Length: 316
Image 1 (cartoon, one colour):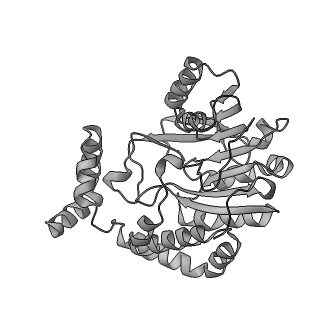
Image 2 (cartoon, one colour):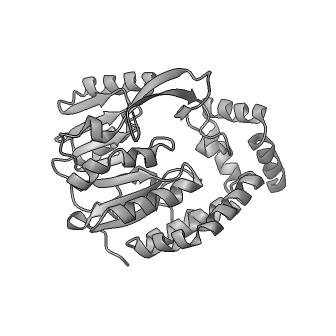
Image 3 (cartoon, one colour):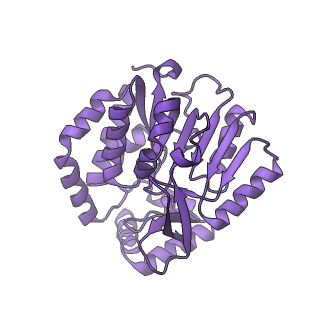
């Protein structure tokens, strides 16, 4: 049975028809059954992708050592090393061992042990308000929210969520974030990834900037420095399908000025696993850094940067 499932899973993961079948499975809501059937299998990544990852990380051993030397607790080191091993071999053993509860993503109680008060929270990749709802559930509504979502359909739902609450201090922007002001092509897909697939990582919708001439939308993007230059910012979260690094560059002024807490996704590429932590460690002085992972696959890895005076997570 195990060999059959493995062969079946590989076939689905590497064919176009199989990918759409996985989407169909998701839509009829039996993905949990399939996930349980295949949970004992090592998560499958294309062999060529693993080889490329292995070469990339071998070429960046010095950077990996620099990052692990500068993150602030042993769990972060274990998570980071487990993620790199997974990307190179698809072995989930260490990944699952050090996985954090998904409901704690961005507001992890091993990092934020005290209530957050009067935050000025920036959500890049606000989607339909899912992270906003999580924030409110943890810390209430008495905060100021700046919410960026370029997908027109998602933004409409986000705006509706804000009005239905209602939230008095929420400022939604139908705008993507980047290093500078520009106009880009933008696509929305029902598939989470074009590289590798698992039933457990499929989502209803995924958005990203693209060079595809047939993209569904043209959107405006701008830097946080341009949009929020005059604002006080205390917390920035980013999950923007690989645009995190450019958006950090475009937020450098307000980050250095305000010294906010940061929760930045680094899972979208191998390069992000190196470049984002390197940039943050080198540019943010008197910060502590943490890595947490919130899924049983390669998605949902967050790099946290917490100013020393706000830090509540101790190295073990």
